[in-house]
Image (cartoon, rainbow, N blue to C red; front, top):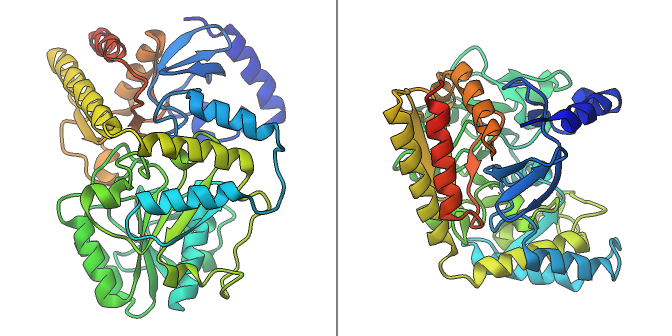
Length: 428
């Protein structure tokens, strides 16, 4: 495939946008080469500025669960735009989507909409601190909760010390209140809690990690977190920005039957438009302004176009009794095909999958946390990525990102993908 137009557009973008992109992962730094500039998308396919077509396994990093340009979402946005694109005033649709989300997700009574997953997680942490009147939080290495200061933290010098900033601009004062645990390692959590008794407001986690590849929780891990939180009056926050309304109607809480105190959402809840949300039982949510003392606001929160897109998407998922079964079956089919192709060509690998999220790690050993994810062969991944790109398959340009399956993918698309992987594997 030729990328002449994309290359020219990237050169122009670099002159006026830092790094030529508005989000770093788009820059292809992890895989080399020039980013692909998208022009349009429909169903399972995205088309670039050079006219190339790709079977899409990013799906805008998750929200296109029913495919690109899903007609009910497009129609809803168009009709709403005709009435006005933003008011800065309450609208009936905000209440409608809130009521539907609360109906679909277990354990929540009230929800507040924001404009991104970053904003949702940032607000959830502030709410947890205000509600518990404690300052420290525990997060997990490899979990990404947006670029808010509290989350850009790396490991400290010891197992029970506070972390240190891993981005300039994040202060040591902020870092000291963020404690870093190991994903799927309950003992690391216990050590942090014991070393900071009475000081921890919340534990925040991706209940199924998607930012170190797809990494499901080990059996009993989330249940143990729930128990620790109950015993120590700590709020458990599930970051379901990726998994909410994707793993099941009620997200991971429904799928794995573990209830969090606060849940954050994004991606699917906006139907592809920029939307985030956080939700909890009424006792916690009533701490938010204007009812309570914890301040949170957003001029464009509940934007009518975003609410229209989200409501159309959630309605489609709520009214389709087999959508999540279809998504799981397609992902399992793809996993089996990838496994067969890579095995036949003598490639060392591990595949992680849960629901409609899947990732390929070029390491034969189990991948269950950030450290084991880091053991993968990145040089092989780079060749794999570019090989698939040439075959018309678009996966995330990073070994640390999950693939997202959409229901728009046909079994013909999956067979084509498996055949392409077999072809690329022969050259690895």
